[in-house]
Length: 369
Image 1 (cartoon, rainbow, N blue to C red):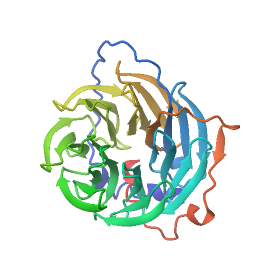
Image 2 (cartoon, helix red, strand yellow):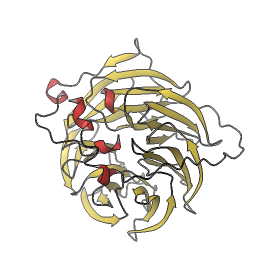
Image 3 (cartoon, rainbow, N blue to C red):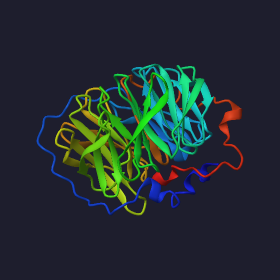
């Protein structure tokens, strides 16, 4: 049931986020000409509403709301937006055709799936926070192809776009796990600090970035040397991070906690690992995505049910967009929203996968909310 995913916030507060007070500091944005208008679409996992929202990036409006998916934690548009994957609290992963808003494939996952990616090798990977594994699928049809055991609580995950490595943020292990996509085997781990939630990875697989909670920092990791190089302070602990296409900047959604929520997107120089600015967001910024130009970012504000559209050129908020309850994962697609006869639809997910198993264990990553 929907209530189950919110029951363990206190239990996982140490593993997820050991939080300090929000500083409220915001640096003045430098003067810069505005970038051209954004295009494409932004997909949002409304975990508290059992739905996905699709935002028209050009108009800041909701183009489509898809209901019928249990507690979607993460959503990813891949292959230039040709397919969208989402994880479901019913212990499954779903593939969606964004042109028709219809489910094209589903597959079971491990316990409490967190994040989903499609790697350059064409395989789909899902982290299972509840049982310490990563599920592997062959292609867009989500044909099961194996399982990788990591232990701990694997959560956020991203591949190097060059295909050399997949990096997983392991929250309870306080480390980044490394997976070789050629063999689908774990090949080591890098200790980073308390409760990393998500990662960003350079295209060549040399560097990774993640947030830690005590103290609140974004750290830069050399994956070949397997050590932390530098760290930048952030106002409150970061959840998701995203690299700009030129890899000169990383942004972090500084969520905080429900009793001490963060309200900033930190903009960090990756060479110096210094915070250039903070941009105001809504309450509890959680997920973040950047478009292919590197000019625009979108942030899910998990505590006030909005998405902040941010101009990274002027470091200002372009719009605040209301969405459904507890927006969590977010992903950008260069494709504009497909036209549809209605603004809402119900995803046709097989009945045997829509309900969570009886006596399902508590959701281990519900402490993000």
